[in-house]
Length: 462
View 1 (cartoon, rainbow, N blue to C red):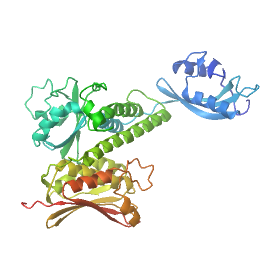
View 2 (tube, rainbow, N blue to C red):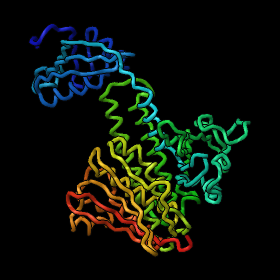
View 3 (cartoon, helix red, strand yellow):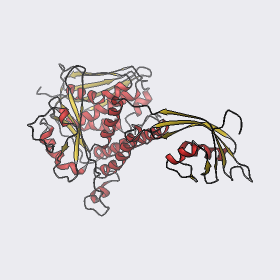
View 4 (cartoon, rainbow, N blue to C red):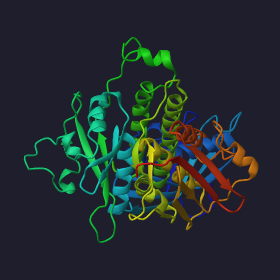
């Protein structure tokens, strides 16, 4: 191990990957990474390189990175198993030939804020859509603990959110400016946990927010009920997922996602890019599991014998604009433009607002997922006598006749094994459309995009 430049440091490891001896600067890095000397190799990438050399039974060399206080160390390391009855059984010789120290790059404030928002969305136990005056338009509660709050919001749609979640230690007359309420501690009736709200404005350049997304978050996890608890017994009898058990599963998974996002965003301290990437993979896997839990819970609802919707007079134009607003951030990440109906357009229908919004989020989300970058998605309205029609069209790869026949089947993903979907979204969406007296269909051709058509009963009194 003498070729390739000046040797800066030597080290020796034993068969159990314990660093027996090391010269500076490697010895100092071992200690600052939390290890001992002698002790198990504490530099993760060096440990990986040593184990690889032992597996391969020949010399390996690679650049490794490690966080060293406020700096990032990059070093060229060569590892060679020592001889014996079997190479590597006596450990390895380690040589360091290059050592560079550079400051940790600082993320811009915008990136940190976006990652913080992503984290908050995944741990929120209630999400609400507010208008420009902070009045509640729609909401989804994820925790059974928020049942009393959900009932109050359901009967009080159109009122300011502070009527349901009074901020603590705020003596000013409502409504306050949203920036003063973002992050405020609030009181949740029926819950002993501490809660806070996050307000995410839907901004337009040069204008005041057109609306808000409200996230209700507690920094304390809910109490875990035992299997003998009366509250959980009905869930276990009813199904394996259920409307009660799903939130119980969702919270610990959401915490895993949140912690992984915190690590990836370097909010707890700077780390090497490779470890941030690992955390990102953990967060992505957790998000897929959360989506699957939610889809399975929805599947149970729509397939239950007593499932029904709560029809009301709604404006499909308003629902479409809200759905587009919620997904605009995701669309912008791919430079996709969503053309939603104008505020002057209106298409009255008889349906449940929350369920139509759920269908629209699924259709637009799918269009974003499968459309190429820098493309467009169109949302169009068509009054057809007794039917109110809403169309979501994209510039994606399109669907063959065979795929169109299968796409609404349960767990059908058309061979897209890596897209992150569960194959339940369109099945659930069609079930919801039919439960509201309507239909969901698709028109497409390979290479020509797809048009998903949602038909609902028109409002005869409009």
